[in-house]
Length: 165
Image (cartoon, rainbow, N blue to C red; front, top):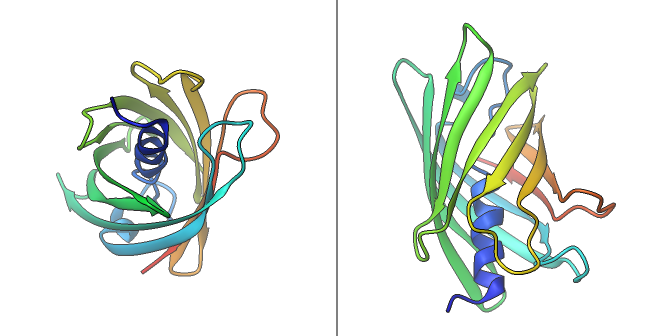
């Protein structure tokens, strides 16, 4: 059985998979990113220091972003992967994420709001005590981005990380 911490880290890492800095463009996210911040396992538990490293590549004329990488809290590391597709005609972002260690996965959907993204993540087979969906705000900052993830009805963020190249 996979520990709840590893499952939550996989979920956190998957949230990073959709992070463009220019409205309508995934291009700024090709490359290697490092991120730091905090994340919590459950809404009622304390936030823990979190570190991530991601590599992203573009395909399909810049409309598809494929990312892979790893996130860690003290004592736990989780490998992640995912794909995000941007449809410039409709303005819709869609995608999927997966925890490569456990096979957990889910779907991503949303839109650009100026340069920021507003996304919903649906979790397939949520772990005990885990919400079935999250909202995510991804905002450009310098040469990277900041993202904040929230569970429904919870004031404190589930994840709050800043990434840079």
